[in-house]
Length: 308
Image 1 (spheres, helix red, strand yellow):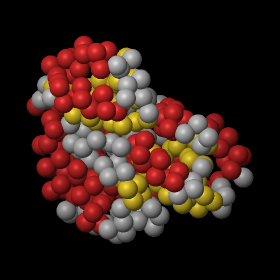
Image 2: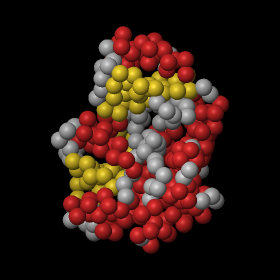
Image 3: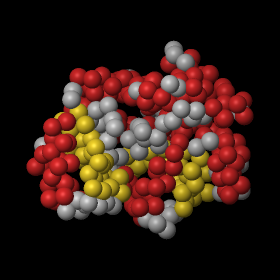
Image 4: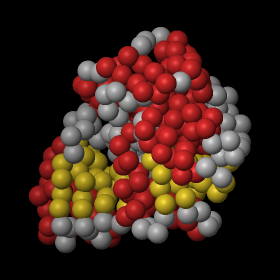
């Protein structure tokens, strides 16, 4: 089975219990969870399996949790589907790091450490700023950009046609929600998040991450990885570092990233992570694409049968 593109979840997909059935069913999974807890120096697996929800939702916990979950799911899928040779990989925000680990850009351990640091830096930036985010549904891209400029906030995510997220100060986001209809935007929903991700309020986190990334050993990925910031394939380690850094305050161009993969002729995607969030976005971007979601043991077995 070839010509499949790997997709990895971003922050917000996490849920208590994630990975627990993988751990119970597989020695490979148990080894990976044990290794992760050792590398991080705290019991991440316990938080993933048992919660509490507010602990797992913390940026410094959910980012390494989603990274680990995605790579465990991939390892178990590869064990079951012998001929699985992915042709490319991409991930939403945090998921871009998981995609690079899957492509061999850096080691599982190095990736886990950097993701945990990224989560911590972003958590600290949230605590130091008064930030918020809002999802805008059913608006033209040009209208959303005009609204963002008017309210002095940033465009965080171009997730799918008619689904764009703004990020910035609480006052700016409140103003954007209030004025959305004036710009022909159908709905504006303030999101339940800890801060203003992918906005200029994350600058301190970006600066700290940049310093950390210089110390991470990287090599060109073994398969093409699409970066969020450029919606392009990056292979040079220096460029990969720059893209991972700029992504913290920059826009996630998810719709363009998927369209780039489609332009290369790819039609089959495997989402690795809880909740089928990416499958929903991909369906909005191009309804003719096939997305198989692996989030737990049952879906792993179902996707295994389909791919075989």
